[in-house]
Amino acid sequence: MTNRKHRKAKKIARCIVLLLLPLGIAGAAGGAVNLREMLSGTNALSMEKTPSAAVPAKKSGDTAVYTKTPPEKTDDDLLWGSLILSEGFGISAETAEDPLIKLENPLETVSDNPGEKPYPTEEQWTSGGDIVRTTYKPYSGTAFFDLEKHGQVNNKTDIPNETLIKESRCLPDFTIEDTSEPQVLIYHTHTTESFEPYVREKYDAGFNYRTTDETKNMVMVGDAIQAELEAKGIGVIHVRTVHDYPSYNGSYGRSRESIVPILEQYPSIKVVLDIHRDAISGDGIAYQPYVEIDGKEAAQVMIISGCDDGTLGMPSYIRNFRFACRLQERLEGDNPGLTRPILFDYRHYNQDLTTGSLLIEVGSHCNTLEQAQYSGQLIGRSLGGMLSDMKED
Image 1 (tube, rainbow, N blue to C red):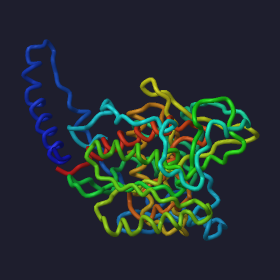
Image 2 (image 1 turned 180 degrees about the vertical axis):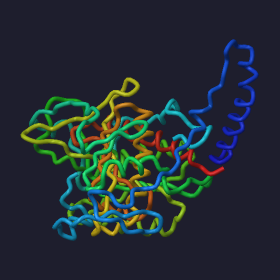
Image 3 (image 1 turned 60 degrees about the vertical axis):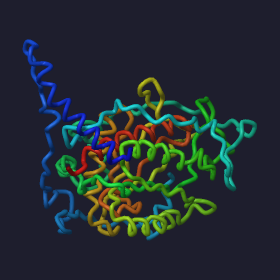
Image 4 (image 1 turned 90 degrees about the vertical axis):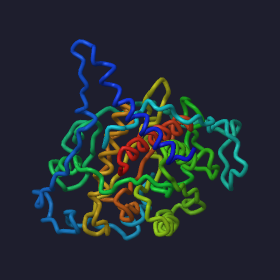
């Protein structure tokens, strides 16, 4: 059965259930059906056009664009980030209870072509500083604010929190179609970023946590996201090209060259995700941010949504932010503790290409391969459910 036929069958089945449900509970004392949660929607709110801590806004379409005095940065820093290391919309919503696709443990997966920089073997691991396992909790302070339902935002810009709170309640700028055409593009600017083999006390001082083996780098995480999206009937293109090896500098420019032709060929694509991992360490200590979800450890994730300071050429950045907030709420609501606050900062990261472009950091270099893969599955399941809810009738 095709995905389209399968979805239609599911919709018919749901309609039958909804029609028979009142009959089944009619005799129950005090029985009532409360559809308010399923039917509630979020109305878009208008922005404050002149925030107190920003230069008066200039219009770009229907989106207000805030500017500030540009910091002194090089073009390479601004455009390519070379110095950076590293809801329901309808009654038929899918839930996080859907079983995940069964995937092979990446540590046990043997690659047919590990590339020029293979993942270390057990005999090659060395001992370095301590790995500290930690779980990041909600933050306090003026730079952080809570989203309406779940999750937080870390506001590193001059735009007032009150303005961003209003924007966070707006729906994403796009809709999802019932089509076999691809609607999600996954790629990796820092493709070779990798992880620990398993939970242990010391990290490897001789390994830079990068490998061309796609069973153990960010391609593996992208595969996990892709599998869950396709299980929801969402068409995906996954770019597996290595953009950061042998040269790390200029990787954002190379990844842009990879994805622009795809976006031109497939205008159906609404969501573009650049999947990375973070690098959290200092003073001989490296951190492993994790959370237990359904009895299994997952790497905590962080969404990065770029803001334009007037020099970055992203006039629609606030639309990406709306999508980031809705995805954050869905991820955290489905999987409590999975997310770190959205980082909203003056960064480019090729997020000018669509109104659904985000960078997602899946764990850090001292998370394990299995933790990162599991997080990829959770991201894919929640995003797939969210996009399915957004489909036009």
